[in-house]
Length: 337
Image (cartoon, rainbow, N blue to C red; front, side, top):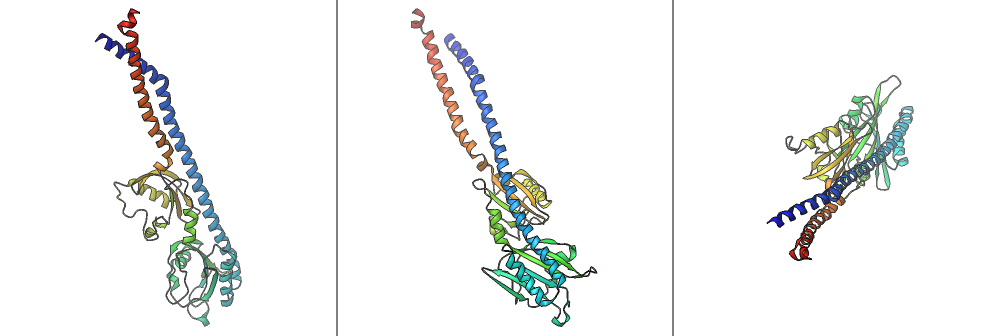
C-alpha cells in the first residue's frame, strides 16, 4: 500500500513536470496556430473578395463610360435614324454590353406616333437593331426608376420579355441615363444592358476554398447571383428565415442591403460559415463570399485528429514505463543489491 502511494506520488510529479515542460507549450502552440491559420484564411478570403469586387466594378465602369460617352452624341442628334445607329454602335464597340436602347417621352416624334424606342441586342455573334414595336415602356423599371431619380441609375436584373417586339433572351441588368434638353426638359432614357449569366460567371469564379461560393444581392436583398438558380431575382436573403433562430442571417442581410463592409460568422444551409461582404460601387448591390468554417480550418482540424490521440498515447506510455521503472528501482532485489 505504501509503495502504491509512493508510486502514485512519483508518477504525479513526473506527469506534472512533463505537462509544464511539454504539454502546456504544445497546447499553446496548437491554439496559437489555429488563430494564426484563421487570420491567414480571413486575409486570403478578403483578398479574393476585393479582387472580385474590383473585377465587377471594372466591368460596370466600362459600361457606364460607354453609356455616358454616347449620351453626348445622342443629345446632339436626336433623330430617329441616328438613334438607331447610336444604339447599335454602343453594342458593337463594347463586347461586355448585351444591349442598348434609346427611348423617348410620349409623342417626341409626332409623325411616328406616341412611342419611339431604338433598340439593339447581341444574340451570339450577331447584333439586331430595330425600332421596337409599340408597348408601354414608360412604366418599365429601367425607364421609370431613372426618370424618377433624375440621374443615372443601375437597375436590378429583370426579365426583358416584351411580346411582339425584340427582347433579350436572358436576364439583364441596366444602366440608365436620363436625357434632357438644354432647358432641362426631360425627353427620354439611354439604357445599356449587361447579361446576368455573363455577370454571374465573373462572381462565381471566386472560390478560394473547397465548398466556398459567392452570392450577390440587390437593393432589397433579392438574390442576383446564387448557386441555386431557383432563388435568383424573386427570392431575398430574408425569405424563409426564422428571425428568432437565424438572427445571424437577418443581420447579414441588413448589412448587405445597407452597403456595409465586413465579415461575420453565419449559419448558412446548416453549416457554420465565415461570410465576407462588401458593396459594389453605388449600385445598391452587395457581393458576399461564403466560406464554410470547416473548409477554412480543415488542415487545422486534421492536425488535431493526429495531435490529440498521439498526446494521449504518449502520456499512457509514459505512465506505463514510469511504473515499470519505479518498481524496478524499488523492488526488494534492487534494494538488496
